[in-house]
Image (cartoon, rainbow, N blue to C red; front, side):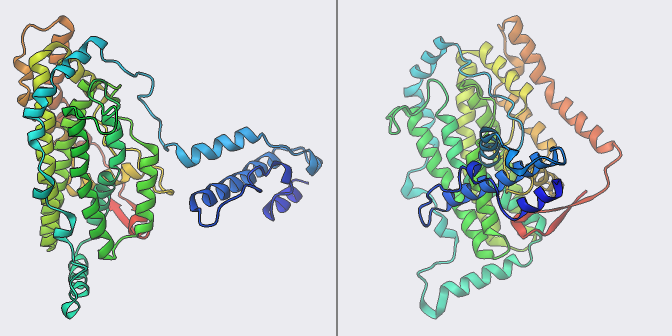
Length: 431
């Protein structure tokens, strides 16, 4: 009887009364609705099959029932929730309310000291400055420029493209980062066009950052070396899933995170530029280099904000720094997924580590640099909790390096080859 059930199920649902999405109207051309409807139907079949496998041998087909809510919840999570556990969802608005006044009082300071790290639009580079000119018609100029770009890209290996795509996807998930900044108490853009310095910074920073993803996306499209459909799916998944940095709506934690992250991104793009030059693509090296330069400018702004917080409120700031470092700084794209690989970020990070684009030693170097910039070791007048936090963070860089050395000294796992959908399923060897 079970085999009969399975055979009938494989040919389509025999239970139209529970195919709750079977008759949902889908407007022609609405790909999202069509995809969701198909997902729900497929999951209905999976749930029915699983139920059939648990039945006594002589159970009539009409007695087989499925909990519709379980089916809907399963499909919802599969479509819209990350493939890894979210660690920092329970604590929100952790900053003591009285500290909001600090950020309100700093609005004029931010105008004079933070907005100066932005560039007027007319003085900013634009993606088109580095790409083939679609208006170049004489002697078929555009097509010739694309041909030259593709010739250069032929010499670049697959593992490099994996890292370049991962960097681009990280940049293209920009809506998530703007959303994150606007969750921070005391500095959020409360109207969408607020004139406060904090709100102006967030919008203008977002506008500058958007050029990075736009440029890399268009460049990768023109190379013909990558599967743009899979890349676009990864971007959509990543924005859908969001990020889980552990900011707690707390601007102390948020600006510590962005200080660290901008530095990390600058290092990653800078090292990618060096590799592009090594592989003979000087134009791509220039692209990655100009993006790294932007990231350094933004790093300077965020680092300056935390420097000011150490000046005004050293005890709570160093406690916040220790709190953030105990959690570990997560990369913005740590929830990336392409519809296939549940461990995509770990595999991408492994390639980046292997190529020297971003490593555990870089993590330690960044922390060491920030500690020196913020003069954490020389802070005085701290509370007992503050002194404990100071001791913890100042001792962290050598501990990180020692752990990395031990990890490298251990018996290594056998090399593995990982397929990446971004490069049409071709495999990259991870040592």
